[in-house]
Length: 208
Image 1 (cartoon, rainbow, N blue to C red):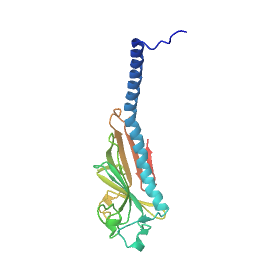
Image 2 (spheres, rainbow, N blue to C red; image 1 turned 120 degrees about the vertical axis):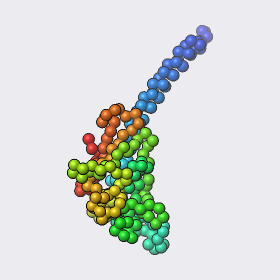
Image 3 (cartoon, rainbow, N blue to C red; image 1 turned 135 degrees about the vertical axis):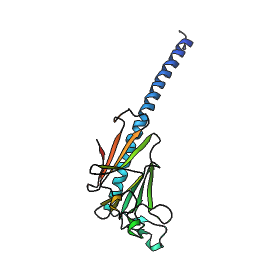
């Protein structure tokens, strides 16, 4: 009977070296692909959040408001649902448009105690950023720091503004564009995508 022979030190070193090279290559590939993957996921999330607000309005979804009397806590918000976008904070808030004390309050996102009910807050991933928030009216593009899109039941009629006094036509938005990119993106327009929301169409879309 021949004795079994184990690995020599040289063979062991070679195997470890090969595993190290393969692991390093895989990690490098993952590191390069992750920012783009996170970016694509962020684009999808933004579009789906706006679509969710629209769907909630169309289906007359009920909300639960713990601040109301017990027999009035579950109700359909008459002013529907909205999405608030804040460029400075790099976040979106899906909310039930429940604060309707005045025409001003029902046409904007109101935070804090007694404000609109927050359904979900989405913070953009660290390497993904909202470069510009634009209000487009014909050939005129205005840079914004915040914007709000509201859908009212039952037909999901859309309203959009810069979250200021809606009585001023200059504050209203016809088309909202989000200019998106991510850290490590290729230079030029290759690493930039736009999400467009037109008030008349009522649907968010990825602008090619």
